[in-house]
Amino acid sequence: MAGSPARVIRHHLAALRMLLVFTVITGIAYPLAVTGIAQGLFPHQANGSMIKDHGRPVASALIGQNFDLSPRKGQTTPAPDPKWFQPRPSAAGSTGYDPTTSGASNLGPNNATLIKTIKQRRAAVAAFDGVQPNRVPDDAVTASGSGLDPDISPVYAYEQVNRVAKARGLGPAAVRDLVARRIDGRSLGFLGQESVNVVQLNHDLAGLK
Image 1 (cartoon, one colour):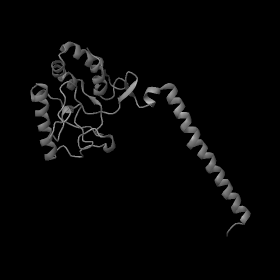
Image 2 (image 1 turned 135 degrees about the vertical axis):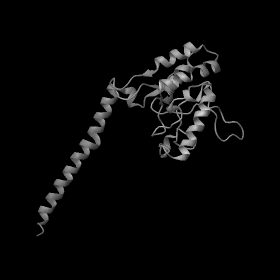
Image 3 (image 1 turned 45 degrees about the horizontal axis):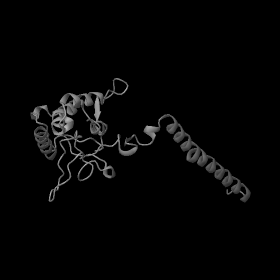
Image 4 (image 1 turned 30 degrees about the horizontal axis):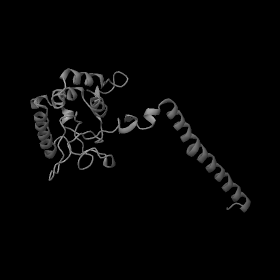
């Protein structure tokens, strides 16, 4: 049985008041509180973990990127620049590390295309870094799930030291020290693996004289 018009109006007004209350709490108060706490306690992380050069943002430590040579005329695929530490491969976008198309290749471990690609990458990395193919670590030839991972293993970072040092005319010891200082330990001391943020490492490298 339908209620009286007055009762219906009271129910609608109560619902409207609840809507307004929760809109203020969850849509205004809560976001402002979280933003204020983040800006007060973790401003670097809250603003995107930006890496700055003379006060100017140049990259984010959370998003990997390519470190390639400028493409030559008629060249379809940019070549990696030997003067920089290289990240792991990326399946995000046509040239990798495109934040608008984050994702993986979605190829399984037994996929013939993936197996062939990994073999080609292993040979290319070995030739580029001047090492034997069996010394190339897995993260040098496989992409991350997001395609934007800025981290590589310390093994892959150390593998690149001699090539970077030679290309820049630096002593290998100085470049190796940069890598050692950029090694991040396991989360909470036991979760995950040690890693090296390539974007931050190359930023340090740019300031090495």
